[in-house]
Image (tube, one colour):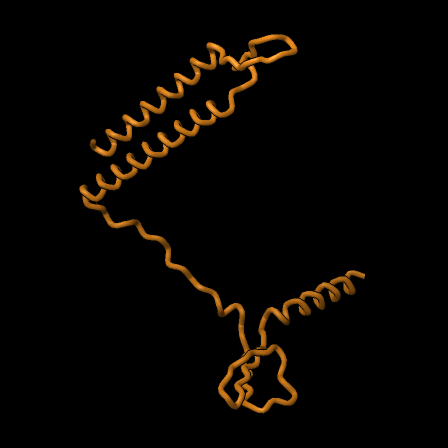
Length: 154
């Protein structure tokens, strides 16, 4: 029984390994010089047929291993670090502005009170906590703008 299983496994492995080991393409060149490719040879073709046996294992690229980057000059390193600081400051400013805009456009339910007549006209009134939160977000924007000015050397 185990011999049959071994034979079946070996036969299946050979069936799948056969097509993967080598592939054949045919390059067809017609009388006008137009080139096409086919997986099977044409029966009636008025032109040149070139058989191409392709080994998929041979078509692998080996990439060089990354080497340590050459030592950068101090001025190039400091310029890169300054550029990183400026970009970081810009990112912080953008995030602070976005947070302020989001809080302004979308106050939470508990941050707005409705004042007016019951069953009649009511108007929204921001709570003291909401006003404090907006002031804190505005302060964050001011600090981020100052950090950006410092990073840019202005």
